[in-house]
Length: 237
Image 1 (tube, rainbow, N blue to C red):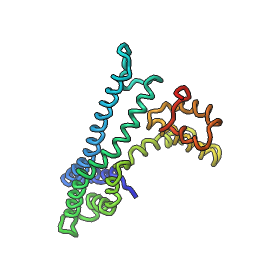
Image 2: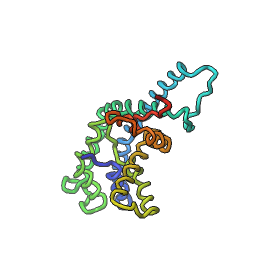
Image 3: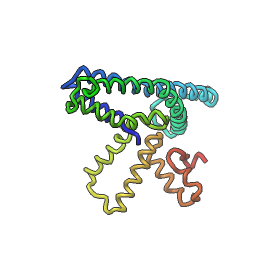
Image 4: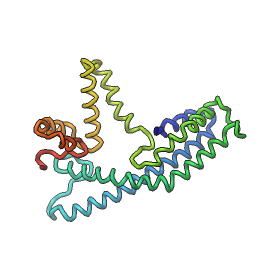
């Protein structure tokens, strides 16, 4: 089980009205954990940028005009996808190392602070107060809240998943019906494919058009090559 730090943080944030001082302290502790995540992303992004720039100098003709970062075109999509894939590969290992080095001791300090605030341990926070409930929730979930430090593939919270599901929730209000149970399963598969495309900087319609025209000729052993994270358009083969 992996618990979500965004959920734990929300409880301390909601307690700021009745206990602003302790709320600020708790939020400061959690901010330090997120600072580790930000540092890992920034350092890996810088490394990947340097790799891409070095590769571009070797491969792009002198008279070619480089595509500006953030622009979307068929020409630069493979480069962006390759960079995104490299980013995630490096992030897993680097994030794990930084978490072990920086986040683990910060978690230990935060736990000691949480325990010291509880009335039953000599603190002054009442168990049923908003702050008391926030502390109890964090301590009850503590082992699960710390699991993310053991694997660089794990996120510190599930915000990305909730953001992806928000489109589904909006869709339910607009479409109302899926037609049948099978229709619901088909819709879920499509949602998953499209969300995965977006995570890997693959244009969903281009991906679906290409895969639909090729999948009948692909052997079962090669189906994985059509997944969004491995897909290459037919023209690239």
